[in-house]
Amino acid sequence: QSQSIVFQIFVCFRHLLSRMAGVLDRHKLLKVEALADEVLRTKEDLLNLDIHRNGRREALGSLRRGESRGATQWLATEGQFLRLPTDTTRNWLQSRQGETDEAIVAARSRLKTQTRALLAENPKVTDLNPGVCDLLLQENRLEQQQRAAEAAEASQKQAAEQKALREQKRSKNVLDYSRFDGMADSDCD
Image (cartoon, rainbow, N blue to C red; front, top):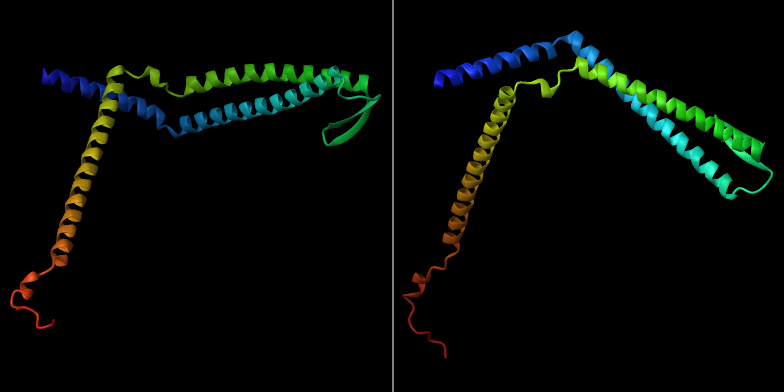
């Protein structure tokens, strides 16, 4: 039975090493890094588009509620300030909002395809054999137990040293009454 356990561990390690060989390939790592960078940039683009959409939503809400009175409105766009009639401003904001919504839909679909490509290129943890996962977890547990035992031993050693130091100090601080034994009654009244 111990030989079968050793064989299973050997198979798990062989499987793990074959997985690691694929991960350690420099070309593959560079490709994974490039794909991950694309995913992160797309997420950043989505964040910026969402910020713009929320700003325009607030402006359209202000116009709808009548908080912006007057025949003309000031509009800041692309580094310029424009003074446009209220109806033109509303139409411009709505058209830009529609463009932003379309850009968000396109970016989300692009993000999905990029994420799929990244997951196809990068080895997934879910593909690992459960025996390999158990073995890795067992190694982690053994390391943690060993660290905990070393820490407990170090703290016990430190506590013993502190106790010895306290006892040494205590022995020096004890009053020696033997020097008073030879004294007779005081001659002072």
